[in-house]
Length: 207
Image 1 (cartoon, rainbow, N blue to C red):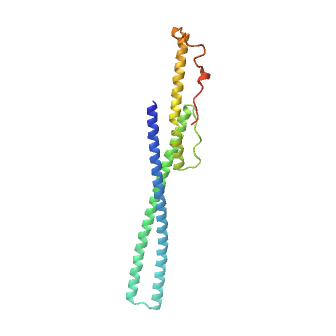
Image 2: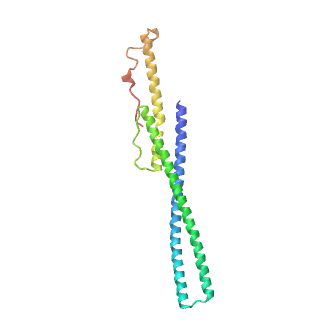
Image 3: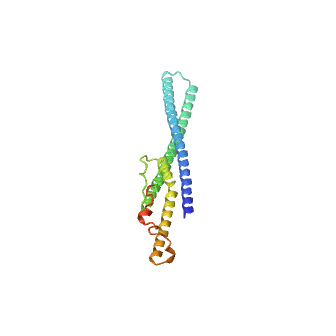
């Protein structure tokens, strides 16, 4: 039983470390995407200004009839190129925004799983009469994962204590039954040598 519990704790630690690593990767990716989106929006604003400036120049040139037909054609081509570039950057900005939204949803999903795991762990400990510290006030993936890892590290000690307590109580009670049944093998046991409930005490409930 101890070996299985230790293995389960190890597996949970590994899963928590993987979740924390994934969280750090997603946070980095989220920051990079946010920076890219800001840069694209800035570039988009600059392109808009360039486009408006070109339109203003073209209007002045037409009003003054200072531009030749070739110059007007080139200006139109440049404006069309800028329009296509602007449309392309708008599409890129939309794609980055969608990726950022997806990353945020994935982080929220990981946080939901960790929060549910913390609640489930506290409920299981409570069923055995134990108690844990309060969940972290900070509602983040890192805080939840750290809380869970810290408490799972204490689980083997609690299990070992419960096992030792159960074994001692079982031996003591069995010996008392032998005494009450008149077993002669217990005559050498001094009176009061077998511990009672008060002497056995209680295991630690705090996790």
